[in-house]
Length: 190
Image 1 (tube, rainbow, N blue to C red):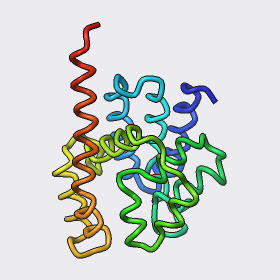
Image 2: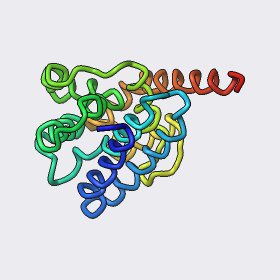
Image 3: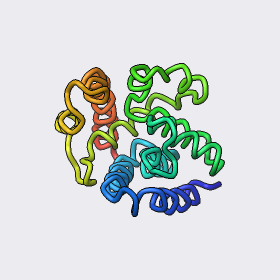
């Protein structure tokens, strides 16, 4: 599948799984894909791959996809088993936004990491940047406000609230690395 075909395939799939059942999650996914397009200059030939992973990253929340209740694992398994998706998209969905830390809290880390090797660090950073700079409604935000929103929505003492606070330093570091790459690209002469 060519890169343009990848995004042409990803959007209708994500829409079919999220738009009706979870319209707010669909709006968020579209916003994350918008962020992916905005950082295309630092992604080079992986820009379409990132956009596809961005729009698909939360399909594991879909009632048609959710099996374990851990959306990165459910989404990645669905992509691999049902759609035979590009392996790199599957790995990015599986590991988006420090999912290994949540997997650990759920007792699923070994399962996640044995089934799905991580994609390159700069792409994992990029997807984290896109996700953590997008509100649940799909509008731009910043990672500090996004982490606070997630902790507030789920409750500070919940599994998600505890995970997101534990992941916050890595989320901030990931997004910072992307910002450094964006600034470097912006300074390069044309």
